[in-house]
Image (cartoon, rainbow, N blue to C red; front, side, top):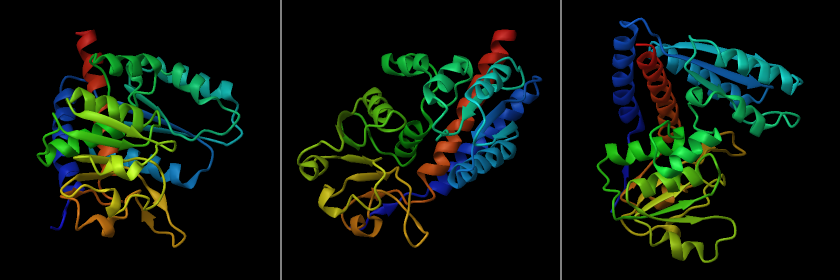
Length: 286
């Protein structure tokens, strides 16, 4: 058996074409969805992500604003900018790029973003809504994973899904979204004992741990669907996921490549969340 490599480009292209069409429909009603991205400091990877997000917005017909602040910017100035964007009717989504410099509290910054403009779904109110199943934005990467699984026709309900990683950004919300799709979910992490024994029970295995090529064929149940959320830069300068891609090809049924699948889909969900925030704002004013 040889795994099918999930065509992220194809999935993303179709999804973004639909978003672009909905954006055009909204613009005909006099509303252009707007996303503001704030980046503090000079982290090279963060700047690449921000450029990709801005480019995706423009291609979708959305309004995009990028605020590049110096590393030493006081926290109060960042909070003041967020307050200004909260009141800007042309902006429907606000994203503050992580990581932030050490002198700035990510918690205070996230809580300063208006709940209705929190398109990353990091605000405690939106996280709580996610937990109880209330309608609202879903975290971009986990929601992107769910969409990928659905697009390739994977039946999630009743399957055993194992998530490796328990971060607030990916691991925890990933588990919640899988539960909402009626999967049986196990979360593994750095303190998990007999991890290989657990991961080999997974019908769907999602790796989000941040260690290059940590997951190999010994972790994979034959026929499992493997989704690689990790993105790590090797000493060679190349990018690699948390999954040893070549090693699992003969064991898994499907596997996502890195880069080129989950990353672009994450940005696609960010566009969707911004579009939906604009739609809600337009409905509220009508």
